[in-house]
Length: 266
Image (cartoon, rainbow, N blue to C red):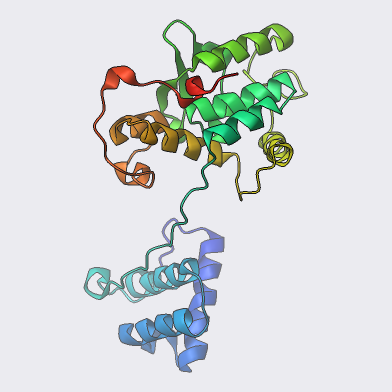
C-alpha cells in the first residue's frame, strides 16, 4: 500500500471504515463494487442516521483503496460527496452587544470584547495582536489572519477610546492583551469565560459564542448597506462564498464605511 503522506491515524481510520464495508457486504473489500458502496452510504444516511463527516470519511477510504491500493483511476469512479449542512450564524443585536460590553467592568475584558466585535476578529486573531498593530492615525488595525496573512480592518473610534483607557491602566508590552504571565497573550479559554459571563449578566440566552461577535460585526455592516466584497476583505475571507452567508448584495458608497460600534452610544 502506498501511504503517501497519510498519517498513522488516517491509515487506522481508513482500515476501520473499510472493515465496516466488509462486515456489511460479508466479502473482501476489494470485491465491493462502487455501486455497492453507494448503497452502503445510502443505508448509513437513511437507516443509521450517520453524519456527513462519517460519509466523507468512507468515501476517502474507498478512494485510497481504489487509487493507492488497487491502482484504479479514481476520476472514472468518483463518488459524489454530500454537502455539510451549515447552520446560520448566531447574531447579536447592537443593543445586546452594547449591554454586554457595558456590564463587563474589567477594563481588559471590556476592551477585548470591544475589539473583537468592532473589528470583526477571530478569537485567535485578537490574542495575537501587538500594540504596534493599532494604527490610531489611520483608524486601522493590522491583523495576522489565517495562513499567516496580514490584513487591515476597522479601528472604531469608540474602541480606540477604550484602548487608550486600557493602555494607561495595564501598559501591555509584547501583546496587546497579555495574560497573567508577562509577555504571554491572554488565553482563548479566558476570553470564552469572559464572554459567557457577559452573556449571563446581560440576559442573553442565545447559543452564542465569542465568534458570534464576528458574525454580528459582518451582519451589522451588511444591514448598514456595506458591500459584501468590502466585508469579505475586512473579515479576511479568501472566498466570497464564505462571506455570502451574511448575505444580500446592496449598493454602497465606500466613503461611508465605519464600524457599527461607532453607532452605539456609551
